[in-house]
Length: 232
Image 1 (cartoon, rainbow, N blue to C red):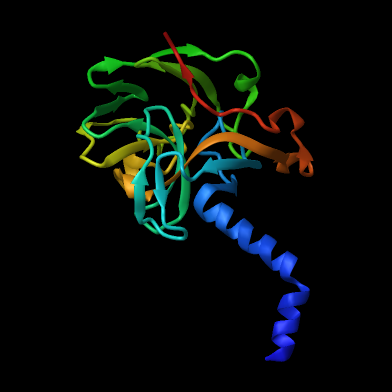
Image 2: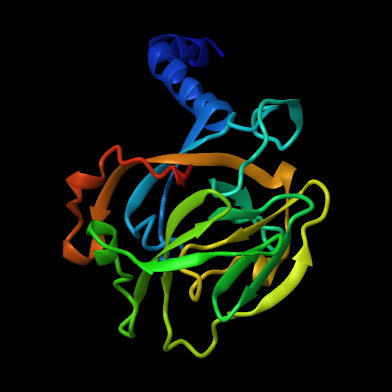
């Protein structure tokens, strides 16, 4: 017992740091490495993203028990949540709020009777194509209900679910879609997501490594904002 106490005393600073980091990740902010292409062109494979755990709710550390509501999730937010299928942590865009009627027809999104408009994306985001897919990839700007974001379509995929709804989002639930609409395991497959399952709002990329190029840093993405654009 004396040896254990001495060991703890000798490594108090390290242990305090580790406990602090665990608390930080469980209660304040978490970070994740992105392994898949379901959020291209916005979030890329190799991005290390930061999720604000207290953006919407204050929870008991290490649990989904809500102590207090802080803010309501917004349409267009990028969020992390626990999959209702297997508990895996997923990152998607929040598209439908409780009470919203959502429909998708041939990859065209309609919210509460308002159809999104689309234009070909320009600039750097248009070059953010999925490295592990060799077919045609189309990067578009999607505008709907006062928000603007970039999405990706893969016209050659025959297994994509391009149609669903119209469906009304239940109370206390949200509808999630990946920005890579033809390559995402989202609410079209796993259903609506409970508010309590949402674990954070993703606002920035901490850093990014390009796995296709021997993990060369993508310095232009260090600290890059991922917040969607609000339109007048």
